[in-house]
Image 1 (cartoon, rainbow, N blue to C red):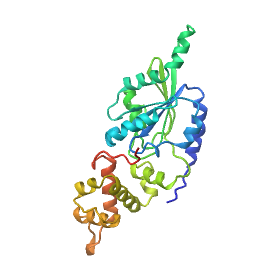
Image 2 (spheres, helix red, strand yellow):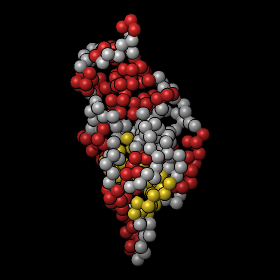
Image 3 (cartoon, rainbow, N blue to C red):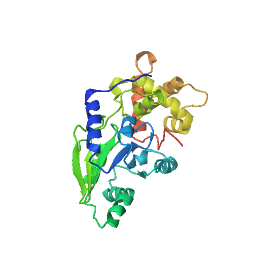
Image 4 (spheres, rainbow, N blue to C red):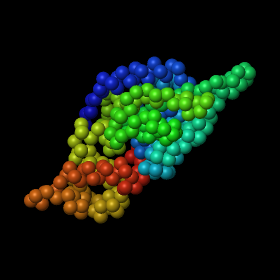
Length: 278
């Protein structure tokens, strides 16, 4: 798979984030806890390399708790901090507390000089469909960011005064121009890349193959199919027959099966699932 896609507005956004980062103290990155590596934009890592990061492992309800804890420890290194979060259950106080804990050393240095730090400023970044807009709406308590079920909804920068001493700058979700195959697949599985530009049947086959490797019981339990010694195509056809996704002449409706399986994964119907594992 070779996906090379970098719309003009995303290039402009990267440049704007680099500019705005210079007036902030740290950054908050919204990460999809199901794919903690693939959901981090490498362009942002380069831009924000000299700033401490608060990593929000979002959608923790959709990922496996033991993996969540491992990733939280893994990311809480080198002066950074990671916390588990579910944007559908907003907790502004958790973000405020974590932000001040992350920046404790800087605050202490100001206090030692007898100077009160007026306001901490953070820039919020994340890829499309990471739940960033839902995160913003939840902690701000208002519809400050547009949300949608497709990537690329947020278009403009928005300041949110979360606390008198903590201001956050929202930015549009952005992807990068070229993906390795494993990254592209993970982004496609979770919906971070628009389904319209992909072959949804191939994506579903790859997902079924991945699921059979790490959680075969989800396939057998949810769809009542045989997994052992079966190819992804054979499993896909079994699902089609079980769910009545049949066209004329007894032909499997592969597109319908593909959309069904991916949709149930994205909504958590299959069960909590972490695709990138420690």
